[in-house]
Structure formats: C-alpha cells, structure tokens
Image (cartoon, rainbow over all chains, first blue to last red; front, side, top):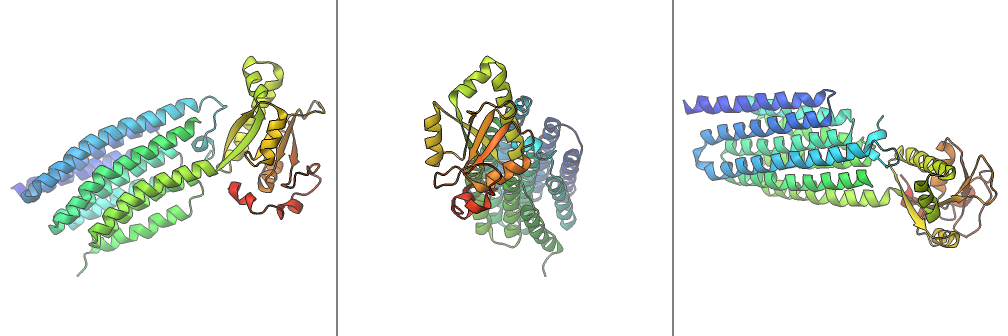
Amino acid sequence: MINVLSYLCIGVGLIFWFWGTSFLLGQRSVLFKLHNLSVSDTLGSISIIFGLLLQRPREVPLLILAILSLALWNTMLGYVLAYCSSSSASSSITPSNTHYGRHDDR
Amino acid sequence: MNLILIGMILALLIPLYEVWKDDDIWQTMLAFSSVSTKTAVMILFISVLRDDWMIGVVGVIILSVGNAGFMLLAHILKRMGDT
Amino acid sequence: MIDSYVYVITALLPLVSCMLIFQVNPYHALVIRGILGAVTALTYTVLGAADVALTEALVGTLLAVVLYTVAVRSSMVLRLGVLKSAIAGGEAGDPQPVSFKQLTTDLQTVFSNHHMRVELVPYPNREELHQALVDKEIHATCHSSETCTDHQPYDITIRLPRLYDILRAELASSTAHLTYMSSSDSVSAHSSIHPSIHSSVHSSESEEAHP
C-alpha cells in the first residue's frame, strides 16, 4: 500500500518535471519560462522526495532537510533570477548601454 | 526503480538541449538552475536506491550550497549587463 | 553487475564537456562550466565517490565559476580614453557629441561581436590622455582631431595591433581616423603602414586584449 503511494508520488513528480521543462523549448519570454520552471521543479522535486521518504522511513531527517532547503532556496532563486534578468532586459532598451548577451547572438 | 531513474535522465536532457541551442544568457541560466536541482534530486534518489546515508548527506549539501553559488553568478552577470 | 543507468549517466559527462569546448561565447561557456560541475558531481556519486562529488560541487560550481567570471570580465575589455568634455557635451546636446555617441555605439557593436566590452575612461585634458596611453593605462584614445575635417571628426589612437586590425576591418561608419601607435612612442601615420611591422615590437602585450 505504502509502496504504491510512494511510486505514485514519484510518478507525479516526474510528470511535473517533464511538464515544466518542456516550456524551456518554446519561444516565450524568460519570465514565463522562469515561472513555470521554478514552480514545476520545486513541486516535482518535493513530490519525488516525499515518495522517497515513504520508501525509506529511516532517512526522515535528511529528506525533510532536503525538502526544506529545496522549498526555501528555489523560491528565493526564482525571485533573484527574475530580478536580475528583468532589470538587465529593461536597460537593454537604451542603445548606449553595453550588452554582451543581447546582440551577439542575433 | 531503474525505469524512474532513466526517466529522470531524459528530463535532464531537455535543459541540456536548450543550452546547446543557445539563445540568450538568461535562458542558459534557467537551464543551469534546472540541471542543478535535477542532479541534486537524482543524487538523493540514488542514495535511497542504494540505501547509502553518506551519498544522501552529499546530495543535501549540494542542494543547499550549489544554489548559493548560482545566485552569486546571477548577480555578477547582472552587474556586467548594467555597466 | 553494474546497472545500466550508470552507463547512461556516465555518458552525460563527455556530452556536456563537448558542449563546453565548442562554445565560443565566454559567458555562456562559464554557465556551461557550472552545468558540467553539477553533472560531474552526479557521475562521481553514481560511481560511489561521495567525497569527490562534494568537492567537485563546491569547487566546480561555486569557486571556479565565480573566479573565472571575474577574470573574464576584467580581461575582455577595451579601455578607451576620452576627454571629459566629450562626455559632458553629450548631455548638453549640441550636434558634435551626437556623432560621438554614434561612434561609441559603433565601437560597442564591433567589439560585442568579439565578446568584448568598451569602457570609457575620462581624462581632463589631451596631455594626460596621451600620457595614459604611453603608460599603458588604457588601450586606445579617442578625441576630436586637430585638422577639423567634416567626414572624420575624431581621432582614435590604438596601441595594440590586434585591436587595430579588428577596428580597421569592421568599423563600418568611418567617422573616425584610425591611428596605430607602437610602444616606442612613434606615431605611425595611417592604415597605409601595415601594422604587422609593429606587431613584433610588442607581441607580449597584444595577448592581454586578444579575444
């Protein structure tokens, strides 16, 4: 019973991973991709780790620590990345600024 | 369990392909964050698969410290874009 | 008996390192170095070396990437010495500095193709500008020329032969008169004198700005 539940959790996490990462291949804006990626990665990883926790109750403190650091760090990372990418994108509109990442690919 | 791990590796290949396609520095950073989270969770999964406590500790440390370096890199890249 | 997934994960390592090697943009290559660190940590873990994986994760994704970012940022730059009046006049808005702004934009476009930045270093007067070029504080100077011709209102003096080659080949809008100055403080005239004559004089310092 617990085994089935754990496989279910891991499967849901894998589906979340595939769903969120598939948006990376599209041509949408960076912020859209960032939102989908951070939400799906965090939720999918938490779901996978919860499935592992059901499988091995002996490693509970380690896995709970993993879930906590994942939830905290990934949300903070999403905010930091959004702040950095959006501020540099808005300043790239003014032509006098140097930008390495914007026009060397086009 | 092996099938699940193969599925995880397939999910890991998507951001790698995105990096190889190479549009924009921030897309590469997104792919980097995705890869680092995925590899850390895979390390945890392998630790449970092999019932090895030591690998689990390494996975948790990578999960919590690798992201800090990533934030530093993002800030340096942003400073570089501004000046 | 080794499981099959070990082979697949180990095959990721040469894949990512080939991506790193064939990347031409240095900043993208740095981010891929971070990805390589993560994948390497995963491979070491699968092969059973947890301590090596921890070291690789800490050094490879944190220390090496940040140090190399600082190194690339401070080396891939053209320091262009300009007069303070040229920058200040750009904000006042008279017609002459508009072409100066156009010139700096052109320079940035040219050098961003070589993944370099252009950094403007202001100096109060023309003597200090020239002295800074001789002292190798800056790579090139840009000031309005004495012989006031209409179609080339600016003089750019460069002391690195490689940068001179790049600019002569790629600076499309020739609003500036390019001059190459060798390190022995003799100003060679114009692009009619080929810079390869001088490149032997200071081949050592040309590497510092080589893209």
